[in-house]
Image 1: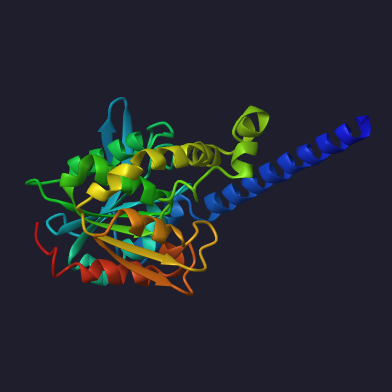
Image 2: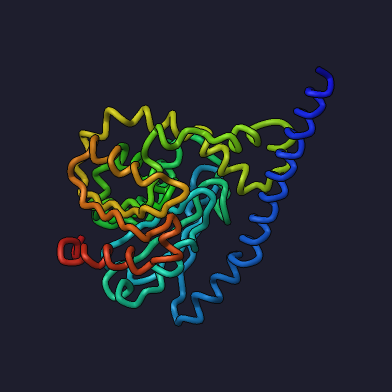
Length: 291
């Protein structure tokens, strides 16, 4: 019996150690390859110069960046978990979009240069999105809002809470199904105790978000049928993080949806296939070319 207990403790401890080491490696790669200044320099090399603004939010600030003309139709991007404003760098630098749109990105709570603490509740996340829209909004204009991955869940909550400010929603590989977004074994493993304390901040924030996600989505389920905002949905069958069956779930609750389910598309669309997002935003120009 003692031998079995020792074996279990050894396996459990080794698993935790491997998960933590992998987490540190991933964050190191992210920070070394995609830190704020590195990406900013990369964007500026394309002759695009994002304008930065820290928006007051209580005792904190929300870090935002935008490209394009503020007088154009505004498109707001919500990144995933973990993530940063520059996850959409290949989109906010596109010349065809810059001619017609103002492209706005921001760091969600717990990430990047935003000082707002990490938030597990989707209502709190949506409140941040609303604060960004309020800051950039003029004459009660409505926004096109795009959410990728966990950002899709934040977008759903924003539509439910602030629908009057949104004219079109674009979901990209979104986390929308309560069933498919239940916490995984590794989320449970690092949700408390020493593993949680030594986890890099970005991944601790991400884990907090993912632990609460399924319950938050379930609370929204009965409200989805009331959504009137026109919606575009993009996902691929090679998505290894969000099951593509999420589309079936969403279609069963929300009818006003134009969807694309692509055989060869993976989860990381803003990096691997930004042209798909660009194409879908450009398609909206004829309908949404004025405030």
